[in-house]
Amino acid sequence: MSVILCEKDLALQQKIEAYADVLAQEAHKLGDHGLSEEEFYQSGLFRGAIERLRGQFSANMRVKRDGETVKTSNATALRRG
Image (cartoon, rainbow, N blue to C red; front, side):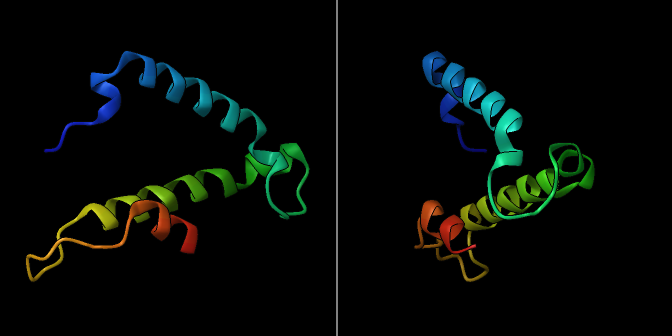
């Protein structure tokens, strides 16, 4: 298993935690979903989007079946959706 950078870098870990908190609190303001704040958090939209991003990141980090590593960067893959 690869090393997760935030496990090695306390300052990065703190920034990630702070950013995650802000993202969770402000997520309802992002995008054009047409939901109220309460509807947004009850709808599963936020959780689903987070899980989709996790899946994209995970898939991009895996080795292709032929043993060749994925050449596209994570950021590019996430932007493309």
